Amino acid sequence: MDRNTGAAEHPSADPDTADAGATERGADASGSPVGRRVILGMLGLGAAGMAAAPWLERRLDTVLAAAADKDPTGVTGLLPGAGGFRYYSVTSSVPHKDADSYRLTVSGLVDRPAGYRLADLRALPQHRIVRDVQCVTGWRVPHTSFEGVRLATLLEAAGVRPGAGAVRFTCFDGAYSESLTLEQARRDDVLVALRMRDEPLGHSHGGPVRLYVAPMYFYKSAKWLSGIEVTREVRPGYWEHRGYDVDAWVGTSNGRDDAPTA
Image 1 (cartoon, rainbow, N blue to C red):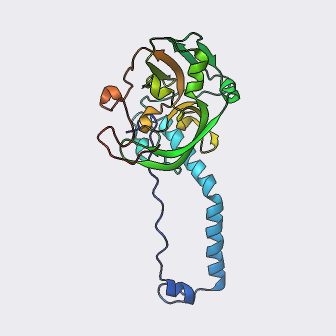
Image 2: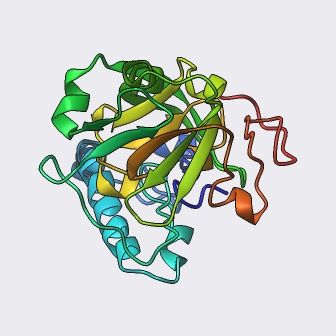
Image 3: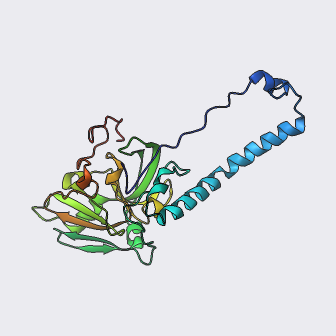
C-alpha cells in the first residue's frame, strides 16, 4: 500500500446506454416529446461540464488535500481524488515548504556534501518520464508524467565514496524514510521530481520535491523529500519495517503480479 505516497485508480463513468431510438425521435424514455430548446440546453450543459472539468478536478483535489492535512485518523485517504490519487501521510500533519524554505541535503559517504534550494534543482537538467503509477494494494493510475533531476546526477555531483552501497531518503514530515541500493538509485528512471502531470508538485502530492522510482511500487517514491544520504548498506524504510518488501519491483514483489510500469 502506498501509504506515504498513495495512488488509486479513478474509475471512469460508463458510456451512455440510453435508448438510441428515443434519442433519434427526440423523445424521452416515456415517449413524451423533447423540445429543441431542451436538447440544445442539454448539449450546452454537457459542453460547459467538459470545459469546467479541469477546474473541478483541481478544486476537489485541493479540498481533499486540505482535509487530509488535518486528519490524524487517515480516513480521508479512503477518498479518491479527482486526478486518481489518494492522500496519505504517516503523521498527523506535514509542514508546507516553498522556494524560500525548502532545502534538500546530500550527505553520507560522499566527497562533496551539498545543499540544494528549489531554484538550484530547477536549474539542473530536467528529465520527463511518463509511466503508470502502481500502488501495492492494487490501484493503478495510468500514464502519469513526472519531471525532475535524475538522482544519478546528484550522486555524481556529490562524489560517491568507495564502500558505499545504498542511498537512504528522509522526508520533512519527520517520520517517513526509504532506501535503494546504489545500483537502483543510479537508474535513469529514478528522479528527484519537481513536477507531476506537467505542473509543479503540490504539497498533497509530496511537493515541492519528492522521490520518483518508476519501476517500483509507489511507496518507494517518498513524498516531501528532504535528505539523501549515501550509506554502506540498505536500511529498510518506514513500511518495510511493517512488512513490505525492500526490493519493490512492480509485479515481482510483495506477492503481487501486476503488469510492470517500466
